[in-house]
Amino acid sequence: MPLSPGERGTGLRVSPDLLEAVRERSRIVDLFPAAELRRAGREFLARCPWHDDRRPSLTVSPARNRVHCFVCARGTDPIGWLQDRQGLSFQEAVLELAQRYGIPLPQDDPEAATRLEQERRQRRRLLDQRQRQREQFQRELQRQLDHGGPGADYLRQRGISAESATTWQLGLAGGRLTIPLSDPGGQCVAFCGRAIAGQEPKYRNSPADLLFQRNGLVFGLDRAAALIRKEGVALLVEGPLDVIQLHQAGYPLAVASLGTGLSPLQLHLLRRQGLKLLLIAYDGDRAGRTATLRLLEQLTPDLVSGALGAAVLVLPEGEDADGLLRRQGRAALEPLLAEARHWLEWRLEQLLAPRHGQAAAGGVVALEVLQQVEREGQALAAQLSEGVLRRTVEQRLEQALRNVQGSVRQGGSDVARQGGSAGISPMEPVAGFPSLTADSPALLPPATTARERVERRALRLFIHAPDCRAPLLCLPLDDPACRAAMDWASNLAIAVAEDQLPAALLQLSVKLPGQTGALLHQAAAPGEELLQLLRRDPQAELKAVMDWLEPVEGLTNGGGGVESTA
Image (cartoon, rainbow, N blue to C red; front, side, top):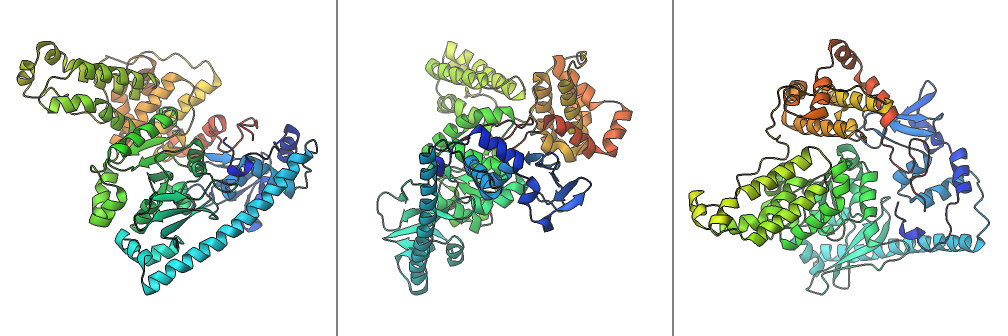
């Protein structure tokens, strides 16, 4: 895991002995107020912070020294819990627990320990300084809001209310609107200054220091975190004022990355809050599209594995979310949210855009353009594992190139014969399914390992227990055929009613070749006895599957090993 700004340069590392002592002596129940815990046999129950938990569903286990929620499928140990709830880094959480339990720090590097203590004191001084600055800047803006001035005029021009200015603790300093930048715990660690009278640069952030690194902070996350945990969704925009405008208009899931990009640490901060779907709403200009493409390329491993979903809001040319809201209100943004494009659909549209452009102009598509489309399409397909996404790319690419072969070979006369356009037919939705033919599914060989059997149980449970689908999608499946079958099931679940999924998959299974179709056929029609068991207690089956395949969040894997250390 990436280090936080406060960890860089201390020289004090978490030694294996210190980590072992912290793991051995720390107790997960000590991290909860007694009033929040309810005894349940040998364990306790508490309200889960990662979803809208109306009745306690977070299991706090003294025996395993872990928490786990069987509703949202998240779990962690004391170190991960402190990281998540207090916004601490791995090193900070370990040292905090060491201090709580009186565990001595390593003495083999006293100079590093001294530097760490000096940095702790410096961080406290900086936090106090930021607090005083924020209050001073806020008083100056409030004076102008009360009596008039350029700061108040600028807020009116941007459509930001006095109430929002107070809520977000906006201020004024030297001709710039100051926007406090807060860490996940809500503490002001820096400022973003927005010019209000044409100064350059338009935006200026505080310099990097022990508290602040631009690529280690997500603006608005401290305010949006609770709802992200509940919904699993975040709306990513480019700048802080976009976030403020969106929250003011009733979109409290909005956050910004302080630039056109998302660093690994920023993504980690979002995923720590339970992010499952990232809605990208960068500006509707060439720079915004380039930034969106760069971000999707960066996120491709997570998108392909199913660890994260993404969709793109297609804003009108030259528009941004802030401007749309100011000029047209929510009515302009609602349809864009409803029609957000699946990340792969959007990438395919961008990939084929040069070919569409020449066709729309009434000309023959140049060979160079076709070669570019082919190269980029093959490169995109190569990043995708076998399954519905890869097949979609390959089929779209083949269709696009096949439709123009005649026009390239015979010139413009073919364009006329094709009805005046060399463009491909309208693209099917990514959630659509290729037209495949087969008489019956292949025979399914028996599972050879315990994990393979559990993965097949997970697929069956997904199909027949709608309430269990969200946590099951988080599971890592090792069997490629089972992953492909889950791809088909999860995509089709979007298009049909909940109770119609088994029948729809049964129909689909006879059209799918090989083991994928056989897996779907068996999972969709497992027999009446198994169906009765699933209907009677699907949560028990979910718990059993999760015990095997739990995607543990935080810093430990199922065996208690360290995922990464400082």
